[in-house]
Amino acid sequence: MVAAKKADFAGIGSELGVDPVIVRIMRNRGMTTIDEMRAFLNKYDCALTDPYLLPDMDKAVDIIRKKIADGMSIRVIGDYDVDGVTSTVILYKGIKALGGQVSYAIPNRITDGYGINESMIENAYENGVDTVITCDNGIAASSAIEKAKGYGMTVVVTDHHEVPYTEKEGKRIYVYPPADALMDPKIPDCGYPGPGICGAMVAYKFISVMRKACPDGEELISHGLMRELEELAGLGTVCDVMELVGENRTVVSNAIKHMNDSANIGIRALRKVCGIEDKPVNAHELGFITGPCINATGRLDSADMSVELLLSEDIKEAVIKATELKNLNDLRKGYTETGEKNALDYIRDNGIDKDRVMIVYLPDLHESLAGIVAGRIKERFYRPVIVFTDSEDGIKGSGRSIEAYNMYEELNKCRELYSKFGGHAMAAGLSLPSENLKIFKERLLNSCSLSDDDMTKKIMIDVPMPLYYVTEELTASLHLLEPFGTGNPKPVFATGGLRILSVRTMGKTGDMCRLNVADESGKRYELVMFNGYKKLKTEAEELYGDDGLTDSLIDIIYYPDINEYNGRRNLQFIVNECRFTRQDKGE
Image (cartoon, rainbow, N blue to C red; front, top):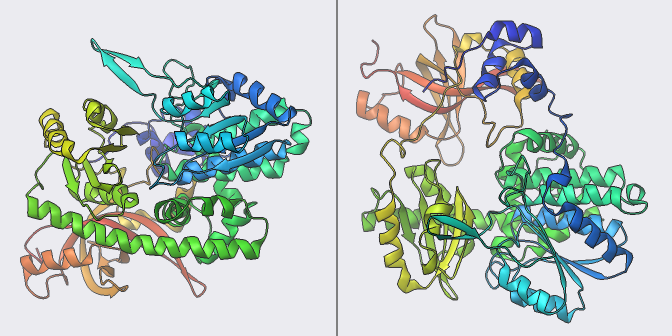
């Protein structure tokens, strides 16, 4: 589908000094005025939302400032994913720099489950902790926080998840934990204009206020340390798949700029062992290379390893820790491939490929990988997927959804079946007794109202653009629109009727290839497909015979890139989707 929003692309482009294609893409992202577009292009300097608009910010600052002054023991309790790890490090480093007596704890995914729990409260109490401050969790932890209050402890919650609720007579009744301060942008009617920020951003905003509120705070927390904490907030934002608009985009843009010479020794070490230390940082790297290594420890071991890496002060020790993380992530990749294959086998053997919500049960899958496998199956079938596996107390599931299906709300309708539950519109986690799985599946499928159109993946084309229009200058100017991600997707270009002249396969799997093609005028171009060659070749053979690809015509969805190799630069086109223009080759 082609986005068809109207504007004076040439006139606005002339005023902003950019190609009309850049204007068209910004218009497709919802911008209507020149001022909005100018601010979008000026991504490093946009003002952040006033942190005092977060609920209980002033109350939380007063509490922690007094606890620091009184020398009380403070414990940060985070979570085991990238957002939980980075928010833990932000709070720990910030409070420690201000002179606080601070420690941290991360729940174990297998033995503790998500977020703060009663055993962690007991441990904190036994260790003489006076005050607990949560990050990336806590808003749904009423029982654990009640226990802390029973011990006489002070609790501050910093979180970004949905507030739990029950429904009575069609009305939502929100359930809040009895904390001394609740700082969560998703608290209904709190007035914070951008609820889509991650836990690390909430933590970063809290420390930015503490820096100004505490005596000598701006000296104790230097500009250099704030830059480092901004890097961590940006990393958490990308890896928690927040929308890259508004203040999120500004923080991520600055984080990426700084990470090319990172102030954090752990990040530098991780980029080194991943072999990307000399490459420019981008959001894709954070989401698919750096971030997964940090995530892997929480999945297969203890996330304490990732916190220790980001707190490292010695580069040699950091490289050792980073190597461990990378090795764990490599191991995780292998487990994930096996899990995906087993999930596809389960779908085939149980005939559920047409179910509007796919419920997959893999008893032997490592429970930390259920969400990844669910995400992969969702992408393949484009419908909501929940993958269950055996756990100590029954079965545990992790779900991934599509735009038309609010998974949190739909699963909340069956809440009485679960022992644990949490999440948001696009993802959720739950635990339940194994005997409840059958009725859970029946109720979820019976209540699902997804249409065939809802479950049809739609690719929105920003600009139908012939390859001859693309220049190195235009390609370079696309960087003005970065960072790309949720809420600001990478631009999508399309063209058709390209004749394949030759094909060269690449890579270990044989699914990558380079295609030399020519347009209608005979001008030649180089296309690169990072996956999909096998599928394309099979379709060509079915249509045209053994030598089906050569001389066939294709339509492509692509993104231009500048390839630099041995001092030479040339334009190449990365193909994301491809189809045959017509069935009769040579027409």
